[in-house]
Length: 123
Length: 87
Image 1 (cartoon, each protein chain N blue to C red):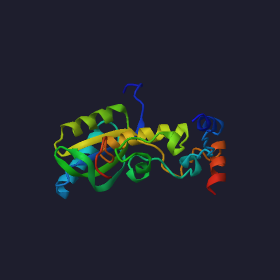
Image 2 (spheres, rainbow over the protein chains, first blue to last red; image 1 turned 120 degrees about the vertical axis):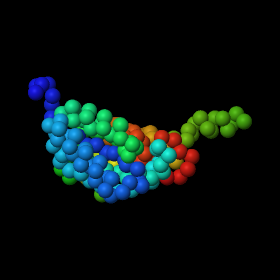
Image 3 (tube, rainbow over the protein chains, first blue to last red; image 1 turned 120 degrees about the horizontal axis):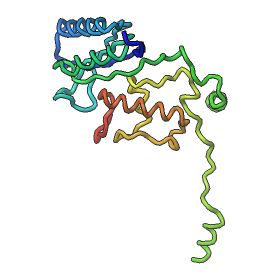
């Protein structure tokens, strides 16, 4: 394997058509897990964010079913996953970003001066 | 007329308001997340524009983060790029 490839944790959000059956969405999830696995990636977690109203229509849809997949892998895994999502008819939008630490794990401003000044005013 | 001009120059309407501290600095657990449109909505106008930090009082660091989050949320259709309707 090329040594230059660095393993990162990524977070992909994708929006599926809202009218898909449960079976259909499951099939897509299996396919995604397979693609990530084949690119030496590892799925950390999958989250159903629910059906939401879209702020603007995408592919003539006004609602969408949001899913979040976190995985560890190289840029190759991202490339493969995004290619699949781009070609698939069911996914109407997707976005991949570096996964960030959630609240509580890293309160990044706790010791800063700004934080203390803000505390004084808001307490 | 001359009088009014002099009074306005001698007493300029100066607003002495204290600078609002950044709301994200105030609460380290108030986490900026592009997936949570509820957090981002107070920082955009009805038309969907990002409100400048001189109005909201955000610090430069958090305004940069906010900007990125809003842009991501727009891609995911959680926030509008431009809107004429209410959120």
